[in-house]
Image (tube, rainbow, N blue to C red; front, side, top):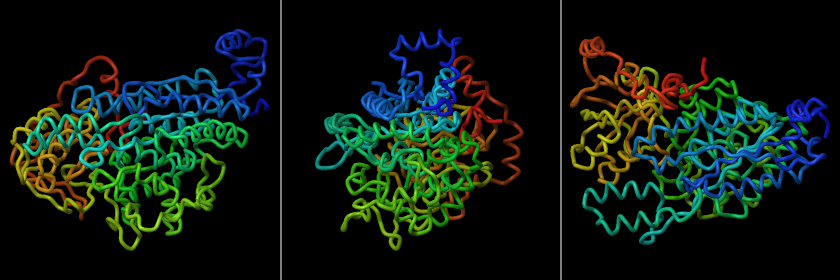
Length: 563
């Protein structure tokens, strides 16, 4: 290969003055001929801290093989991840969204420092996936994202289980609906092995969004973690990066405005996680593509929810894999005029070309009811609602499928943290007609913007899902469902009105008119604002402190490298 295909590694290894550099590389396995090849990083988020990522070392090895077999020189390295499921409901969860920035920064650091010409990035959990894509966009060197794949469901009493089943079982146990023995059985059976959480939660939402964006190979988003298909996908990704280098196709050639519109469309059609809003805006920022909350509203007006997937539906991602995965849906959306088929992808072909020969994958098998037809959608427009109003001057994000209703008015019951709210729910403080307010959980106030899966699951487990609403300046897990509103901005820690709500204040959530309001006289609101003082930071040192100082509003993606 010529030096023009080694735009970055040639600076590091070519010439007599680079003999010391080559000497170091020889010690990690480089031979003479390797210095003439493009160096391709294979970055894996493998770790044993979470089952989502516990198998990614094998996928990393497959990608290395793919790179080397295609004529590149693979240089593998690792980066961190944290487990949302393990840290959920604890102070440790504050590090979850922070880890997205740490991972992106670490990949950028290694690739930039060592002069890599391309990158395979392998992720398997909520935050490391957008982090990988953010790094790809920042560096703008040919690259491919590989999804680690979805977990198989656990089984209990002939019902499928996943991690959300365990969180909801906690609420059911607190209400006396199940005993201790059954709670323990669910705990033991829910997570049978490696792979990302099994519903259309954040990991599977983001894998689908990234494939629709064009940054992973076709079918990468819908494969079982423990499967030969997934190993083949990882190997092909390594070879694809070598091909992208030859063709000089870079991430920002792929991650265009139209590609992000495709990603949003797919997220909506799948009934995906609210976290996709946060992550897609952050990914677009890294690619220098303008994207805002309002784009989700505009696209959502014409895109229906078609897929009956958990948490609000009945099927797991493994069922979606079984009927053909994402490509048939992409083909259908394209035929309906809802996707931009001319967008370039990491195959070196357009999205339309990738799905043109999707047989036997499309159409979906006769008789399946997971993916609904356009004339009988689950919801005719988006479930992701961007709300404004005096409680959300800069926006808030709700996931409203319609099953919860479209409007809720109730009296506030205020908690200053997730832990306090969970305790209140479990001991029976929260009753029908309440709007649970959880504040000081935003990007700055947390710091870190924790996910409120424990409180939302406890509400559902206690059978209050249609009778209680919840609002927060924190986030939700993709597993959260019910009448819930998150990402309320401005957050409490910077003076947002959510920080001034008092118990029994009337609150209205209107998903038809996209409004979130504190129903008090203007005079009373202004009085409360005049007495507000900015709280002291919760953290004075370390990564959480740095994050709180740098992070933007959730409405801007909670990024740390903004203007």
